[in-house]
Amino acid sequence: MSRLNWFEASPEGAKALGGIHQYVTKSTNLPDQLVHLVFLRVSQINGCAHCIDIHSRDLIKGGMSVEKTLLVPVWHEAEYLFTEQERAALAWTEEVTLVSETHVSDEAYAAASAAFSPKDLVDLTITIGAMNAFNRMGVSFRVKPAAKA
Image: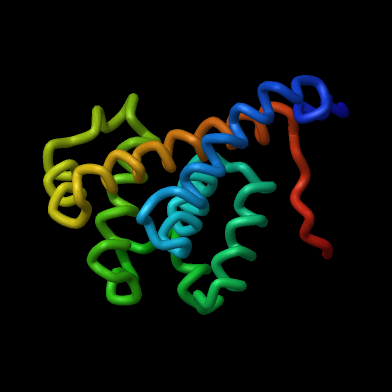
């Protein structure tokens, strides 16, 4: 079944979400690669094919190796590929995205707080929340990935 184009159906809503996206990609101190890494991990957890496609491509274009990008879902097993800050961000991403299961543990908070300044931790959490919102739109309205066979 074909679903509506949410950007066309609610341009004001799309613009509002776009403003959050603009903030996290242009106005924070978080490195671009870290933001896209978080976007990718959130999208993997939520199963948003469109966003997985976009953010995998963004990471590779930004210089992340294909091998590292492919191992993001299992970063715990390949943690040697990720910096301490990336590992803290990935752990925080999982905790916040799966909030109903994790209730965002004190351990994850301590690790994230050690790796990020207070403002950066808030901006990281906004980044996670924004991508969760985009994933819910992408999955709900079945936005297709650009990937070709």
